[in-house]
Amino acid sequence: MVRVQILTTPGCTGCAKVEKMLDELGVKYTVIDVTKKPALVKKYKLMTAPGTIINGKLAFSGVPSKKALVEKLGKKFK
Image 1: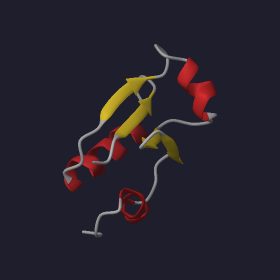
Image 2: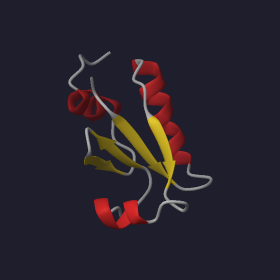
Image 3: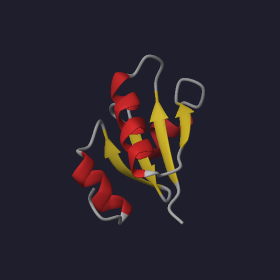
């Protein structure tokens, strides 16, 4: 099972785009507000929100294309 976390900031429109893509793909994820957990910014060397963590590794910083997201998740592109 793939574990996905979205590192967000308040009011992040890009974060909502990634969440929508994951919803469309039927992928479960956890949303983490990095203003409440700033240690994650350092841990993943996050430069911009959203940060997409897949199985404990930073897969994307910013909004990926849906195709790139699917490839990282290992699912067939819809």
